[in-house]
Length: 591
Image 1 (cartoon, rainbow, N blue to C red):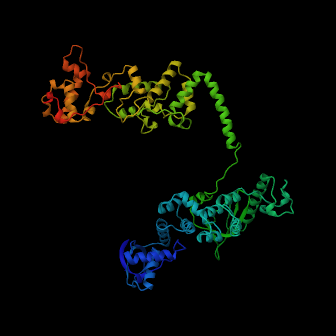
Image 2: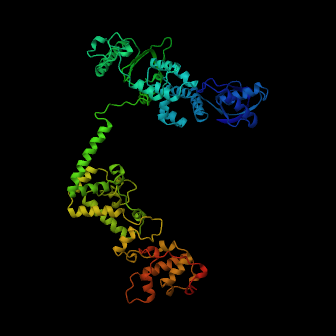
C-alpha cells in the first residue's frame, strides 16, 4: 500500500459500487468543495497495466473531479491523491467499497442490503461484515432481510415512496403478498408497518393457500366454497396446518427425484439471497417455504451461493419474524393469579414468625437481585474501605469474624483454595453474606436447620452490615439516627481508634502543630518549627501510640495524648468543626 498523486487522466471509474443511486446535487456540492479546498480524502485505487488505476472507493469524488474537468475548471493532468492497494482480489475490492460507503455517507438501505448479501455470498461471515462496517450483527441481519424483497419493493425504497419500516414488515411475506400490498398503497389504501406486519403474521388460513386436496379437510369453513378463495377460511386451523405440512413434504419428495437439491424453510420471508438463478448447463434446485401462517412459496431452477454454513444457520430466519407461541394463560390473568397466591402466603407468614424470619434472611442474603430489587441489603461502604488493607482496624476484624461464624454455620464457607469460585472481587465473608448466594431455595433449607438464637443473630448481623454513617464523604455533626444510636451504645472512638500516620498525613502542617500542643506531644519533641511535615507525622504517630495505654496516674502530657480526639471523630452533635490554624497563629509553645 502506498500514497501518491496521479493525473486524473490515469484514473478509471469503478466497475461496481454498492451505492446504486448517487444524488447529482451531492456531486455538484462535492465539486464546489474540491474546487475550493481540493480533494481532502484519498481515493483508494488498484494498479492496472499501462499506468492506469481503477478506483475502488471514492466514486463520488471521482465523478466530481470529472464534472470539473468537463467544465474546464481543472485539466486532465490534475493531480489526485490516491492510496494504491496492490494485489486486490475482486472480493476484497467489493468489501472495501462497501465498508467505505457504510462508514461515510449513508448507503441506501437496499444498496446496503445487497452489498452485505454479496459479501456473504462470497464466503464472508456475519462477524466479518459487522467488524468491517462497525454495525451490530443484528443490524446486518435486518438489512439482509431487505435483500429478499421483490424488485418492485426495492425500487419503491430507493425512490423514497416506501418507508424502511414498511419495507422491513414486507419481508415477512411472499413476493406475491408484497406486490399486493404495494398495489394497495399505490391505490391510496393507507398502511403502516404494524398494519403490514399484522396482515402477514396473523393471516388466517384460506382455501387459496391450501396445496392439498380440499376433500382431505374434514372441518368447516367460515364461508361456502362458492365464495372467493381468499375470503373463505378454514375453521380448524390445526388440521389445516397439519395437512399443509404433509403436502409440502410430499412436494419436496417429488422434486428431490429430479432437482439438484430441495431446501425447505418454515419461516416468514425465506432468505432468497442465499440463492441465484441457475445458468445454462447448471443443475437447478428447488426451494420451498411454508410460512408459519400456512402460505407456500416454491421456486425452482436455483443454485446455492457459497454462503458459509454458520451464516446459513444464523440467517435462516429473519430477525423481524418473532415466533410467539400462544400462552396457556394471558399475561393479565397470570399476574392476577400470582397476586392471589402472594397475598395468601403473606397472610400465613404473619402468624408463622419463625418462617417469616427465615424468609427475611433469605431476601437480605440474596442482595439486590432478590424480588426484582424490592428487598435488598448492601454492605456499608466502610467495610470495603478497609478490606484490602494490611493493618485493618480490629473493629473490621470483629465484624468479619461474626460473618465467618454464620457462613460456617450454614455450611457455605469456601473450601481451601476455592476462593475464586466466589468471584475475583470477593472481599470476605461479610460480602458473600449479602449477595453472593443467589439460590433462595437452598438458603431457605439451610436456615431451617439453625436454632432460633442463631437465626436471630444472623438476621441482626445482616441488618448491622448495612448500618453506618449515612454520608461517607462528609463530617457528620448532625443529630441523626447514626449518632443517636452511637451515643446510646456509649461509643467512644478512643476505645477503637488512635491517630495514626494515615490520619495525620491528611492534615496540614499548621494543624499538626496545633495537635502537637493539644495532645502534649511538645514535651518530648524539639522546636516544632524545626520539623518538616513528614517528621511531624512520624513523631505524632509515635506519641499517640506511646500514650494509648497511659493510666490514671500518668503525667499530664501522657493523659493529653491518651484522651486527645478530633471533633470529627466524636458522635456528639455539639462537636464544632475544627478550625484550621494558620502559620502565623501557631501557639507560643510551638515556637
